[in-house]
Length: 221
Image (cartoon, rainbow, N blue to C red; front, side, top):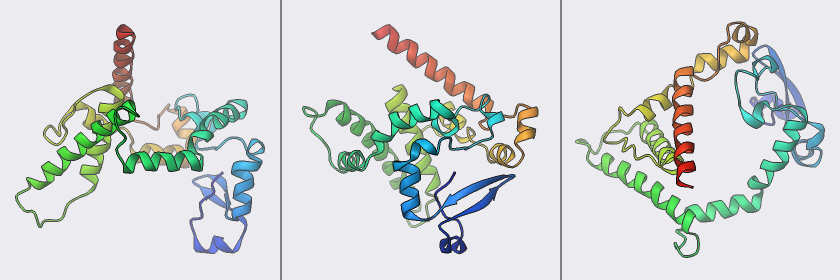
């Protein structure tokens, strides 16, 4: 089920049906209906249906492909973190630096992210032609991957100076468009040939990094 309109024609209806590949999807457009589906009566509208049920075992998307009671439990656990109050608090944390004495962990994470951002800025300043257009996709991707590596895995990638590092390369090919299109439009083929939606080589790499990190933390504790 989706609550995002994709065509201006849909605005004249409270809800409508749209085909996503071979699967019919329900689009809810009326604000009050959306509130009932997502908040008031959410327990009656279980299962996001992000992918075909047959593909759930070979693709783990957590809440997105959870079903039944598992979906209800995950929804109830995750939803409070994205309440309006918590979102406003997160926005305040991003827009101002808390003192290390008050919020040491948040301050540390902010410093990590700031360090990555300053590295990218310095790299952009060092370009020979300062008036040339910038392809924003590359620095944004570098910022995201470097922050994930630093905050989650305590890895210093320095991708601006080392753009060929393994973490960044695997991240580039982690999500491949044709795999998603095949799963959405022809799920039976993905199921029969066991074609996963994420690149298996990249997925195995990140799982190995995760396992090493868990072992390291366990040893420290």
